Length: 307
Length: 283
Image (tube, rainbow over all chains, first blue to last red; front, side):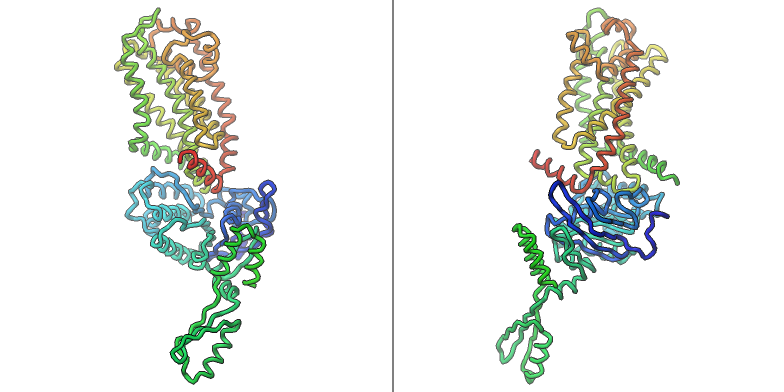
């Protein structure tokens, strides 16, 4: 089939993606590849171009330049068969609000029948935890329930690739946690590739195996949450108790310092703690500078830190 | 399984579900019943008012005209309103995100609105036959005429609603269509014979389908003597069909292009921008 990616090919391949609105460059050369499976977060401050990037991948927006392949097809030329293999969950969907929950999923499933074996509505409702709401009208759902329904609608055709746009904006902590559990269930369940956009580092760290940070129109950092965190940790703070007093020491090489400390303390050191300068701090600095209009400085600082 | 045929079938199922939803949602039902109920009540009181030169009361004469108006009203404004609202709440974008979804969406909504119009026309027709003197289907060919005018009315007005719905990006601008629309009803001979108007207004009225749908319905349901108040003392059957067919052809030619343009432009950010606009407008 012309539409299928070569076996083992990437789910998403983006090279030198550019987008320009009028005389404003939003994307200035984005490069990344996603291998099939796993959760990737596209993280970045508001206005960094995350939504633009994802809309280009979804085939909802024509790009200004560069090469893009999603599931082996250029999104500008994606047909219905291609469309059937991806699911899209937007930030704020209020569609079909007079419908009943179960009716909507059963109806949406119909659209995928020529292309795949869609989910049974009841099984899907159970997966997303909405069995009790099956007969309710959609407008009576809470925000968290509504978003879980959106996820169900996004995966009803068993997509190979799922896009989630800012999935937990406006959630209370409980709804957020339930939603995160759902995403974990999904990524375990089938080999769906999930790309989520978020401006929230904490969410990216909790959900994603890989984080792409988008700022200033390009990807400025790419790696697992751990790798990014380690990269961000240039200095570490070592704390311990000795002779009943709290001691603090800042060092670039915490391991060597700790080894030396413990080798010479004669057992007097207790409560040893090592704190690395966190990715969170580096990211917050990036966002702050970004919002202050100092995009270039922000990226320089961030890349300096995570080098 | 042929994917295109499947999308049409799925769309038809959507039409049936949408119809069921409309009939079980009190606000939807009231939105239809209230204005129609008021108009019918007014016409009931006009049963005693005679029109010069005929044996038919103003109430009886206006009842078939009201049926014709109902087709234009629901056909144009119904389709237009659905398209504009569904772009704001994301229903259209959702359809775009599914394989065959846009086809299914359009078939579903055109189908459910057509069913809805058929339902309201039937209700009005029965009320007319039961409560208004002089209203009857004199011969089988009048039935045929009624059905033909109804069908051509849908074909002329629903694609026009789609054209307007595709052109109007901001829900606030729906008023731009609504106001001239009301004015048009006033000069289309719905609640009073068009011959009572100045000549130039008669000309404008006769450009649009509202007049011709009213005329066709009057022809189908009124006694022959009522033709005396029409322009040229004639039902002008051929002209009526030609004008309505012309509107149908023009709007059906425009609708697909404009709808696909509308669909192509739809994205999450364009929807968010539109919603922001609405929130600013309406607090």
